[in-house]
Every structure is written in C-alpha cells, then in structure tokens.
Image (tube, rainbow, N blue to C red; front, side, top):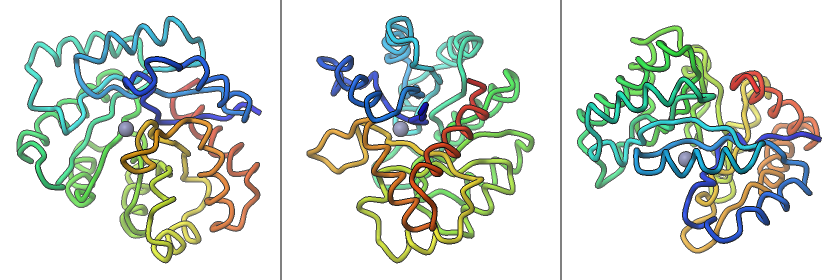
Length: 248
Ligand SMILES: [Zn+2]
C-alpha cells in the first residue's frame, strides 16, 4: 500500500507539536505520500523545512485567494524561483464566498499563477468556491494546463466542464458533511478515472475537530460506497492518479 493524500496543509500550526506522530498514524493506515500546497509567502519557508525533514512530503507553492491581497510583485518573482523545485503550483484560484478579497484582485493573482504553471510545465492545485463558472472561463483562456480542482463540492455538470479542460476532481472530507443527495448523485456519475483523494487537513471536519491525513480512508470508503467500488480500488487508483499528475 502506498496511498497519497493529494492535499494536506501539514505546515499548519495545528501540526506544530506532533507532526511526526500524525504521519506515523497515516503510514500505519497505508498513506505514505503527502502533497502540501502553499497558501502565502510567509509559509513557504516552513514548507521547505518540512520537505527537508520528511522524505515523503512533496511541495506545491502558491498564493491562496484568501491571502492574495498580502502579496506584491516581488512575491511573484520569489514564487517563480521556488517553482523550480516543486511538484505543482497552488493552491490558487477564486472564492466568491463572503468577506474575501475583491474578485478582480483574486483573478489577477490566479492568472499570474496560471502563467507560472505554463512556464514551469507544472500542474495547478485549484481552490474554487462558489466560482466554478469563472474558474472554468479562466482555465479555458489559459488552455493546455493540467491539475486538480481540490475539495470539489459542485455538481456533475461543473465537474465535467473541468474534466474537459484537462483537470482532475479532488474529493475530500467535505463529503462527510455534504448534502447526501447531491454527493450521491455526483459520485455515482463521476468515473473513478477522474478522481484524486485528499483530506485538506487540518480543515475539512468543521471548526472544532482537527482533520488528519489518516482520514483519507474515510473519504475512500464514501467514494467506494457511492460509486459502487471497493475501497482498496479507490485508494489504489486515485493514488496512482496523484502520482501521475505530480510526477512522483
Ligand atoms: Zn487547502
């Protein structure tokens, strides 16, 4: 077993005290590869520390839409340099939920990072919340990219639009609290060949509980049940997709 958590924020302060233990527990469950996305310039150095300490942690670097207004052109140059040594660009994207930076500003930083993905020939890890139509438009404009729509919670038509543009669909613990009918209908129609599994730890379980990479098994069980597969197939196949996408 060599399963992949394709999106977990292990550099988050929630793991500052016991990350080694958290990773051991994940490995006991069969999850031994972890993709850690970047969110803002002030976390990039901490990500590098993790990569040096743990050989099975792989890094993406990016500017998350929530924090885009903290960045300057110099950060973009720094990001450009860091991407020489990364498996992906991200997480980046658009978020139209309340109290987020202005959408024009978000779009500027998202498109700048799509440009860097093309330049470095890297996949993109995309955050798309209440913004699937706009993200689809921008990906169509920057055609030829590849990547994953992480923590996907849209409908089958929206998923198919992303798949057409060359993107995988990242399925995570958001499913645990998602409306069952919608999730059921999505996963019964979405072929396994387009899916990646993730936890988005420490997020994904609601405000009070810390999510961990070992919960990837729970995600796989739900995907298996709703899609009519075995959990082991789901873990094997989706982990292989992550390895192919991130060239691990
Ligand atoms: Zn994330």
